[in-house]
Image (cartoon, rainbow, N blue to C red; front, side, top):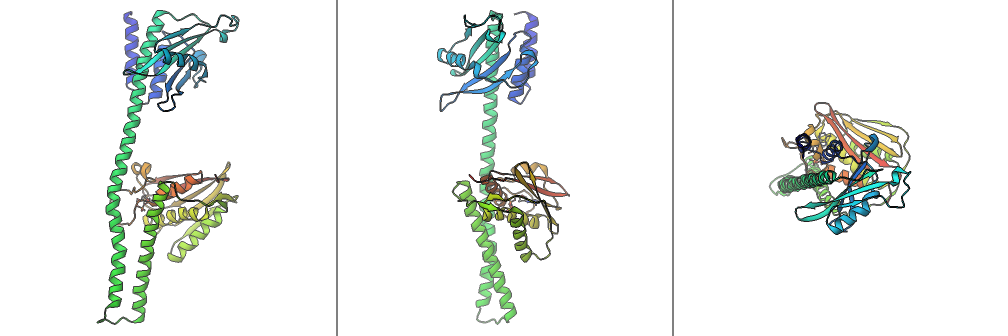
Length: 395
Ligand code: ADP
């Protein structure tokens, strides 16, 4: 090869090597190499490890100023042939193809994609209206195939590493959870044991008001224990997808107000502000959706003490959008991606009790309604949860 070509290839490969996103790297590779090797469309086909069917991993139209992803059915035939034969294949237009119609004059070039000694797919180029591919084109296509496999392997590695990171984080969270839950179970049990032992003491006499006070503490702590156990069971059943849902027409605005009323009975100083536009009924599980709002309100009470809770509801396209906002301390951006993971709690001072199950449960319930939940937060300003639910949310 001439030194100009080598210098060009070197520059291109260096540029591609530095790109972290495999798709942009492939885009750059194909677009820049097209100056020495003209083609209209390119596609990468990989064999699915389980079904053995061909999957289009990447497709791009580069001819005539096109940049959008191309339909890739055109290359499936030659890709299967390349994989069956394990070698490069050139296919000229069919002899009966209309010579006047440029699009019928398809010149195909397919190159096998070897991952180590494993043949897993094919890289296919198509050029309309000729000329036929030269030897140099074939060599460049082989180089591109090598680079393509390197980029796909790098992508697979990145995905595997991300999955490993997530599994490791889950394992760490589970370890933390054991100590959290031990503490969370011990505290109410300690209260229950302490106050009931006091009441049972034969050498002490408690007036009626004190007895009632002790009993109501025991009652509250027993409720706390029950909620905790319920949360643990529920999150396990949501995790294994065995929690049953009962769908029926629901008015979310009425449901949210009911939950707020129940919270107000317990926290009389709480302030709620409602900004609801008329909402159509949705198909949902009332008990589970109530749980979502109860969790969000309880979190606002725990993590944004003293703040008003502002709830809005409106229709956006065929969905209803409900937001729950507080004006608390907010959450640092670095923790936002993990908030809905099971057992996740924002690290730091642990003055507020919790298990890290609440937001996980919320998310699973919303997903079961084919909806979405996300959060935005600004330190020192507050936190806002966005819930979108389709108007027809049944299965
Ligand atoms: P828990 O409250 O049991 O820790 P959650 O899953 O309900 O678990 O919440 C996860 C974390 O998200 C909490 O530990 C808390 O740090 C943070 N968080 C949730 N809601 C808010 C909020 N409204 N304001 C600030 N932080 C919040």
